[in-house]
Amino acid sequence: MTNESDKKKDDAVQTSSAPVEKSSIPGLSELLEDPSKRLFFKRVAVGGGTALLGGAASYGAGIHSLKGKVSEEYPQIDEKLFKPKDQRDVVLNFVSSKALNKKHPERNEQYNRLQKKEFNWVNGIKDMYSKPWDNSKPGYTQKDRALQKAGWEPLNLAGSRGSANLQPNTPFNTWDQSDVEKEQYQFESKKHASDAIKSAARVFGAVKCGIAKRDKRWDYDPLYDIENETELSWEKDFPFEPKTVIVLLASMDYDCIATAPAWTADGTAADGYSQMGVKATQMAKFLKGLGYHAVGAGNDLGSSVPYAIMAGLGEGARNGALISPGVGPRVRILKIYTDFDFVEYDSPHTWGITEFCLSCGKCAEACPSGAIPKMDSENGGYGFEPNYEFSDEPGYTWNNHIGIKKFYSDAKKCYNFWVENGGACSACIASCTFNEPDFWHHWFIMAINPVVPKFLHASMALSHPAFGYGHTNDPKRAIKFWKMGEGMRTNLGLKNNIGTSNKT
Amino acid sequence: MEQMQWFLMGVLFTLSVFALAWLSVKVRLQWYVWAGMITGVLLILFGIGWAGASFMEGISQSGSMGLIFFCGPGIVMIILLWRFLIAPEFEKQAK
Image 1 (cartoon, rainbow over the protein chains, first blue to last red):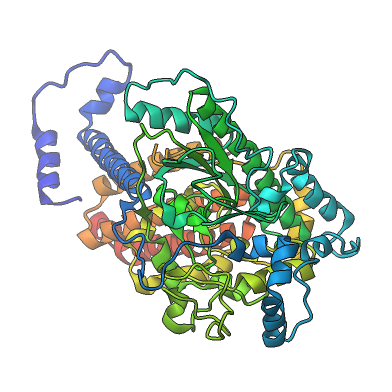
Image 2: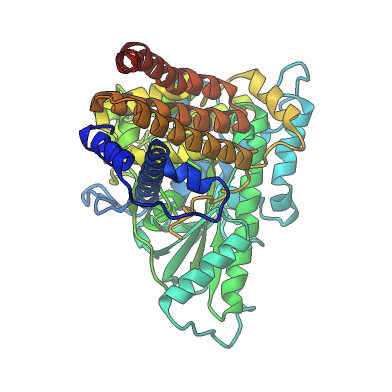
């Protein structure tokens, strides 16, 4: 910075006889008459201005990066392997249906034989919440159990608990369309319509909202009514032909999830399910109020992760979940099927997340049941077919939706652990490198991730636990969670302080 | 708290600009010394920002690591540059 030219200027100032304009501020004129002080202030202005401009440019580049790039790669489908997913072959649906368990005893038998277990699918969910608490074991006490049950209560009261297990047409996610307004509201433009839907989603408490075209590849077909043990058809039973699927994300509490796999974590997961029901029914009602048909859905009707990816909300991860910038996998996905199609559709985006998952594997290390493909699996566990343990056994992968390029996990093992544990686990969410609270330094890492060379991803994944994040199975986390109380951040939603909630 | 952190970082940034400007007036230095000094200041500011946010979010380990891995190298860099390249320049000019 200091160089010959500056020195000459300095000398020139010293020898110059040009009068310095008098300032009205007392003392300033004397200050400016001193050439070294003038030079000093000039450098402060130039240096500070340059630094501010540099900062503003970096901020702009960060915002641009956080918006993600349109992904041409999703979805990659192997047409020879792909077929629509039968709802009955989803683990949570299967374990909730006595008729299906009776029909397929070989599934339970094969699992127990291969995994050397004596596990009963049918009583699983009942057993899960009947385990006795132990008040000397942090995370598994009476208050943790109470939190779990309280989390589910809105769904229970609404008679919609089944929606978590794929039961369609529950009171929250009703198929009844008798309350659709006769007059259809006409939006000025597709953009206005999309903005209005997203604004409503924000009011309902969603952290993000995206809009995807209805895509039969992601819909369960046929559908299945678990309560009445009957098959349902999109054409004959569903009340209208959906054209659009609106996807909302409901976030879960960071510190509660950090207690995983303790029962405490299941408290926010259960609450997430209740939020799904509430928000889905609100958004469906909003669309009906505009004069369009709409049905809300939790885990039912279609596969949530691909719809969320198609709606530009995140990317598919090793743990089988959606990773959304800012909240990571700490979200529950809900959908609203509607025939309203005068909207601007979102498109799949990438932030380098799936690519990061190829070098990370923290979720697989943390998974207590070994359900998630580890880094040393064939192709790192990423492909068109499952390649986890026993996936080559005939019929063993009945629960997977084969033919889509993604990470395949063994949800049967996952569910088995839930039952043994006495609550849903969430260790894969808590340990995820993208599971962070909403503070600037995490946004910074998210923003630079797409330009970080691949070979550094593994070291970034290693530094995550080194910096104190992503630990699981730690009783101290449950103690910490319960001590936080009032005054601690709630972190229920994104602060959206740098304008990156969704793409708005 | 978060607003207070950003305010204090603004104060620190301003003081850093003043300090570097003062240095530029007082002594002539090579470009790499300037590069080192600016990097050092940025690392310290980054580390403080990182640590502040980490302590606020309740992950003190991240805060400590931020101070060690970002502020630490920044301070070391500035001290070494001062000791071996800047102070001798001051002495030279004094003579």
